[in-house]
Length: 371
Image 1: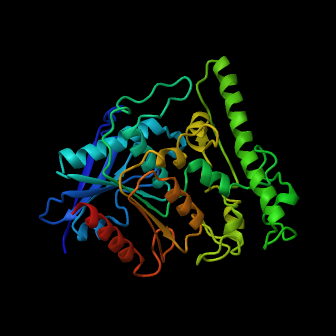
Image 2: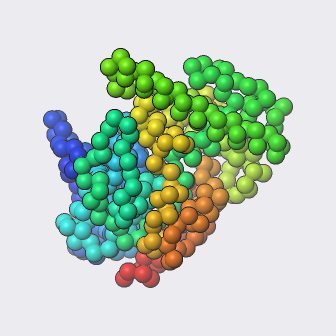
Image 3: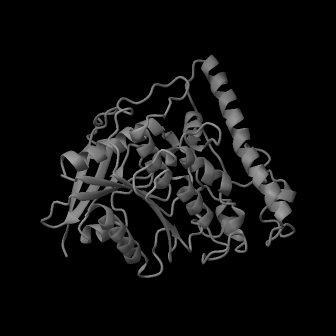
């Protein structure tokens, strides 16, 4: 079955074409050759390239249009601003309706995209996003076209939530990668695994405290810079592969491989430079990572989603867990909502039929409501 792929590149309502020629909004539209699908899916992430998302051809083969869509922050999460990302997503939704001819648009939130697409639908139906102090909202963010359905697939509850769950609670000095409280060190054999309930309680509290300490420093640093006429600055966050569930399989048991994270073995990954939030700016921290200030947390946005909604959990995921899917499902305001658990890792690479099974589930769910 032939699949046609069309590159789509468009300006945003708040950013035009770059001098070198590139557009801020780019993606690839997939459809079965010779068809004009009336139902289309759009998938977007905070920074990962979704143009050739792994579900694109599976759903195109089943008769849907699929737009793998990237905002201006593709590969540039360290400068992320939510309102600008939302207007870029809106460009893709409008293109599906006005150019591709889709009558029904399904928002697919995969991985980090779960909270991002929830924020998009939330803003489209009940504008609520506010600008950071000193910034103005992006043009067009109060005029977003809503989707007709929402799907959360292997998705967590937002960037502040996943960062805090993963960040190393034993860090005692953000300027020194080696500074560690041994009594909270996840990789100190004296602490486990297995980890005691007391250790987990102290560790989780330390993770939350670490996120909030960074926020306090960020706000103070912004004030210091502003007094000198500066707007922002970059900084690094290290040691963010340290969720106890990654190391101890007895915590929230699933079919995941033990002692694994998306970057390999957690102890080794935690010492690398490839963690989330490894590079950001002060304003991006407040916009994206702060528990207290970020508007990317899914809960309030899910409470504004009333369109048909599907939540899918991958039962061998090493970074997103069943409790995430349960929380996503419970927070949705939709009366028509379903939650399913499927065999698969985070991106449904394994087992061999995982992606086909996910596509079959999505196909049946969409067609039951919109075909």
